Image 1 (cartoon, helix red, strand yellow):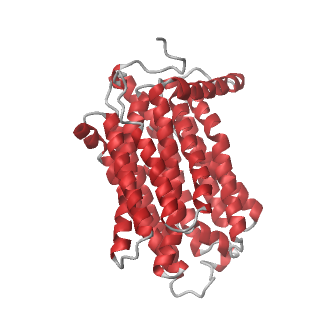
Image 2 (cartoon, rainbow, N blue to C red):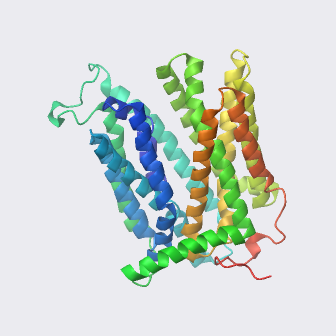
Image 3 (cartoon, rainbow, N blue to C red):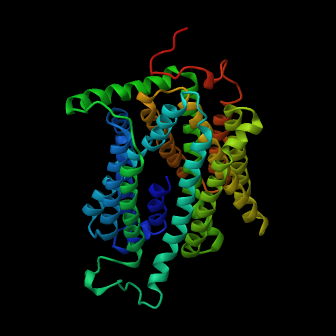
Amino acid sequence: MFLFWLPVGLYIPSQVLLLTERGMSLAVVAGLFAVHSITVSVMELPTGGLSDVIGRRAVLAGAGLLNLSALTVMALGTTVWALAVAMFLMGTGRALSSGPAEAWYVDTVHAHLGPTAELRTGLARGSTAGAAALAVGTLVGGALPLLLSLGADPGARLTGATGGLVLPLSVPGLLGATVGIGYVAYVLTALPEPPRPPATLRGVLRGVPATMLGGLRLGVTEPLVRRVLLTSVAVGAALASIELLTPGRAARLTGAPESGAVLYASLACAGFLCTALGSHSAPLVARLTGSGERAVLAALGVSTSGMVLLGVTAAWDGGTAAPVLAAVGYGLAYLGFGAAGPNENDLLHHRVDSTLRATALSVKSLALQLSGALAGLVAGSLPIGPLPWLMGATTLLLGALLWTRRMKTAPESRPAATGLPERV
């Protein structure tokens, strides 16, 4: 988890700036991001099914190869078509990586300790590692181009021998590609899997669609899985609102886009750290509240309070108090997201068997992405102020309310779902 998300954190701060430095307009940049989003959405379910058919390790290694190729092309590409290919590769790699690592972990624990083994602590540690990697990567990726350009003329290249391909803004992506090599090597050497029947092309073509349909059917027929998916819809809408509205709010607060970008990078790093803290505390929250379901309710309640605080301070001219309270709200939102995720996935894995595990995680990811895209369009059309923030808070509150009613039978004591309707 750490090795996968560290390259993402490295290139986040410099990605847009690098594209504009290459001469791309903001409209072209938005189009390139759309290529990435569409690719992830289209590939999410097929790649999840592929992992359930051919194995976790092969899919994770493929994701790593695609991501390091994408980062290399992104760092060195100078034409729209080359950058579009990079976004396609990156989107495919992101879709491939959605679920297999976690599915491998759960399968391995079940193989060694049985289907009733405790999962929450390991899931929390994985989420913590990913969030910590994003925090570290954001700091390094934001500072590295500035350090490399100190004392150089504006637009100066790192070396004349590269023909202008390598800019200071390119270095975080190239560093991320190097980390990607280590990630692939680690996956191939440290993630052993039980032997699987040899996969044939015909078997894969037949097995992947069937697995996809099983995952979709599971989300409709299994009450707890449906609750997890609807919660992902609510969290996706809230996250989209935060990510869309925070950069502009930071720029308005500082009075300039450049200083606003620095403030936003600092907030993003703080948000990732809060996510890491929330993920690490997920088992503790479950113990204090008495169950995974109540833990999700409490965590989403914390995130909702943070969103409300962001909305209230958006309309409050309270001097220095308003920005401070807004930062607190930002941290609370991500703290709750971090604590909710491992508890949701712990419940999910006790209701899904190995044949659909990665597919179920892909369905969850797809629900979050699609709701985020829709919520972003709605929030972007609303006037600047508290309304878009409170829209996200309301959606998140509805997601939290899904967990106020406990299941009749504790999920941990029930057999794992197979994707077929449960017998009455």
